[in-house]
Amino acid sequence: MSAHRWMTTIRFRLTVSYSAWVFVLGALVITAIYLGVLYTLETAEPSTQSPLVKVLIGPDGVRYWTAEKQNALKDFERDVQYQAVTLLGRYSALALSALFLLSLAIGWWQAGRALRPIRRITQRAREISATDLSRRIALDGPSDELRGLADTIDDMLARLDTAFADQRRLLGDASHELRNPLAIIQANVDAVLTRPDATAAEREQAGEVVRRAVLRMSGLVEDLLATGRRDAPAFAETEADLGELAEESAAEHDQLATEAGITLTRRLAPGLRVTGDRDALKRATANLLSNALRFAPGGSTVELATGRGEGWCWLAVRDQGPGLGPEAQARVFDRFWQAGEHATHNGHSGLGLAIVRQIVESHDGHATVHSSPGHGSTFVLWLPDLAAPHRVPAASQA
Image 1 (cartoon, rainbow, N blue to C red):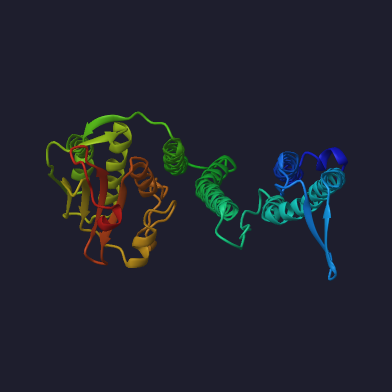
Image 2: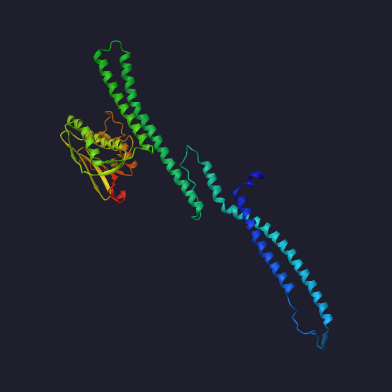
């Protein structure tokens, strides 16, 4: 490390500032002591009141000095005192210089100990690359500001690791989902084009297969675009009535329910005021209804209901389909997950319920599912109620 570089380090600045303060305080203390001693010696009065001073010089008797001899003695004492003060000042200066040098050494050592965790944080941060975010700083020691900084960085790395893992999984799943319809399109087109004797019926059948594959790809692309839009922080936030949104979505699915032989019923409460993106909330409701109509058997009923409770507005869709087990309920809102043997690829990407959860969470709400195998499923969206000043924690609604 060059001289200019180490002089700009925090350790050097701490050392110099610490030593400078020690030097200034020491200089003030020594100067005060020196001036106090000097003032005391200059203003001191003789300790005797008589022109004669009695001095005991031995066991044989006492001798008396005259005033002239006393004055000579005082001059001698003043010379001694002056030399003592001079020596005091000289030794004080030497002591102050030694104190400054010693404080530099101690300050450098102490600053190094105090900043050792920062060096460790810096070293670990340099070792962590953009492709491997699984490592952590994991700083030990007392719970001080540096430990808090290291823990905060570890939390940030954990969130980045999760986000990058989700991104890689999304890209991999999307590539997998797109590969299948592309393979179908290529196989059917090649089969028709490479056979000059292909009949019109065969060409028509191949065209229908290609059309369905294109529809499936279009639905997947739309869901991916919706996922990207919901990941964005900004959306059109307005006040909306949850019951009205539910009725509009139900009206759009009445014909689909009729064609599938399913009865779509409503039980909607009025005056449920929520804040959010109206189109996004309608899409979440539509995805729930589409999912219910997809799995509900013919002749059954799908119920759409809304209500409020404990500071939340809720929207629920109940079907009489095959239901979900505990393991499936834990994954039903994951991207590209589909319900095992009940999964079908008729234009469905497996992103519908993931988008539902994403939309609801972006509105400070949460989505839950209640189901059991053979007894249907109920999906519930919980959104903050504008009319309620307080609400219970979201965990209690799960």
